[in-house]
Length: 102
Length: 170
Image 1 (cartoon, each protein chain N blue to C red):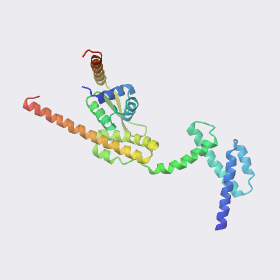
Image 2 (tube, rainbow over the protein chains, first blue to last red):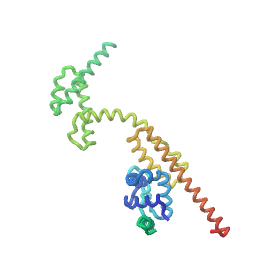
Image 3 (cartoon, rainbow over the protein chains, first blue to last red):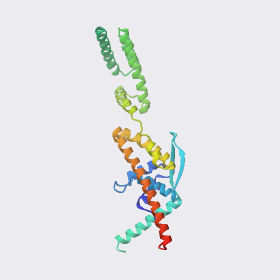
Image 4 (cartoon, chains in turn yellow, purple):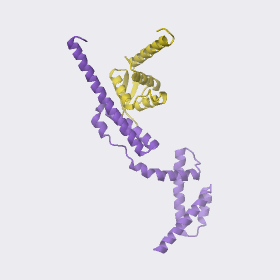
């Protein structure tokens, strides 16, 4: 099951494309979400690591132009499936509730 | 000694006056012509040195701004900003990564250190040292808290899962 934070991160990852650093994903979320929807950086990073363990996110380790170790993240096929299913469920339940199906 | 100071002050004033006139001149050759009319060799030499520094600065600004005709006002503004900004910037090094290394797993710590270094540069430029340091500490504390909270939560879930399995409730 995909939580709200995880869903938001996966959507942001899908939007930012391959080879994105954690800070870039978070910057995208800062620009896309309201402050009350935005998790703290700590919660965001922990969720990202957790999703990497669940194999929803791929992480490639590399060295950046400054010579620092970096992790570049990318949404995996499993992650894409999980977020698609989660968004579909949210929409279905929302539509049922709002349009009088529930 | 007093006589020397008065002479030096007069020379500085003269150099400044000539530099003010030179700043209003567009052509480098015209500026050299003006310098040629200065009778006092020491003043002439000082004005030439100042002009050389201004020229180097102008070249730097035109490269930074990608504008081959950066005007004197921009150059002087840049010089003022640079002299104001550089001494304060040199003192403000990023905080030590010791806390990150000690409290977070090595696999994440390397990446987090790089991310925080980027954020530090951004915050220093945007907010200044005090606020940047506050944000840095806040973020690092958040990262450490969330990591260990996650570890404890996962362990509790494992223990509860095992307990449920043994008691036949799972």
